[in-house]
Length: 620
Figure 1 (cartoon, one colour):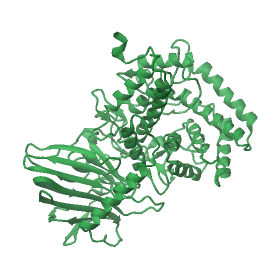
Figure 2: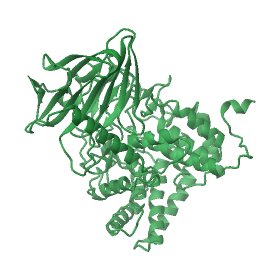
Figure 3: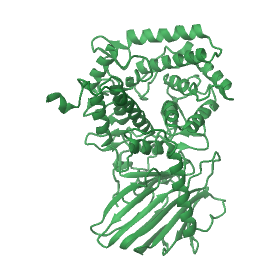
Figure 4: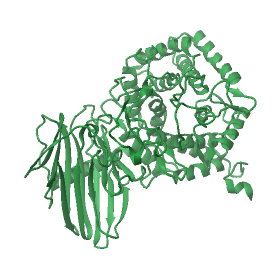
């Protein structure tokens, strides 16, 4: 058992209210309860000694390990191939897709011997409240109870398992022969709850079947039938796992504190709902056939309390999954961080930033509907008009920008772009659906933003659109310009921007957000390439007709996925995954890039070869 396995060496399981990471060695080293954004129960990924873990491993010389998902499910299988036999651990969480939030969550871990004889070693070491509070252990014939502050963890066993006390923790050794199984179920509940029901082998088989059926039925709704079916299915399952079912709010990532650079300080808490990330997912979810998920998020967005922004604006950039706006940032200075990457932060101080782009993304989400005349449409339109009327008076102001820099406010081109999107989509829907709107003011403002971007966001020297006015710095967020319809994907200005990005931000098909040395962002250290931007680059290439280059970049990007098809936020200089994991926005961008590339390939004339093929093709 390594102290700190690579970030990518994990699979994700969940029940649509919280989730857990299981390493490729069978160690569950990240889990919060009862919600994604609750204090951790197991967090060995951020501090091996003080974070806690729930391990089921095989300690036998010569053992090799393989990890996989059962196809089109969130059921994770870790296989141990030993000289004495083959064993496996099957991990899943029973799914509750209802709108009712519950404090009870269950992790099921089933051990099986497939061949020969396998010795499993089990250790359950919970550490409540980010490892800051002690717990008591009650060990009895019915299992173990870990008594924490306002929360209880019940460990129940099936099969030849005899848990033993290990201080305030539990350990056991389990020997299984071919065909035998054993299981442990960890149930999280509040301190006053009744003990969970008796766990039986028959009951676990029924739960396994129910979870398998849930995921197969849900994924079966996906309309995508393109060239990259397996990767798109895995990405959409990941997006579902990262969505809080009781409210419909998706979080940005499952984790907090994982670094963008090993031993660096860019370590943030991503277990919250960003207006930007979630809003941009709406169109993709509708196109894939998941209209219920898209509508659930828009309903959540429509319930947010307007006017709670830190600077008096209608919205702030992120919220908790229940819509709570307070995300006070705190440093957990008792934790050393993944491989010493301190500080570890909970909460997120960027919630107080001004980011004007969120209004474009919010209106983009609210204005899309499979049935614009549904019951909620009038209230939704009132919401849209209120945001746009405010935006007309406040769009022309510096902000912190999409990347949440801490180096001061600037006139970011992307922020202006999304203000244009907000007004453009509002005008379109008011016109198409005959909705009341101040169209003269909206139109005049939209056009003023367009002219400003073309005049001040364009650099004659660089022959490219730039990060902020008055600079020559490139920024990969502008890859969205043709996607949102601001500019044609084959406009000369856009193609020269794409060429400039290719020269400066792209490294072997991987894309940096921007150059921190050229545009200081208030933080020390560096970062890897941004996987979100790499997929946006594929999308932009496809729309520009550079299909050979786009397909090469996409296929190459897929090789950076981990062993079960998951992506963190970034790719480091030696190909390692960095940042919080898995990141929803990356998987969303993968889906949209796959759909765009499929469409362009299907419509392309195979007799016409473009000049922008893969790198090796340019030299032969």
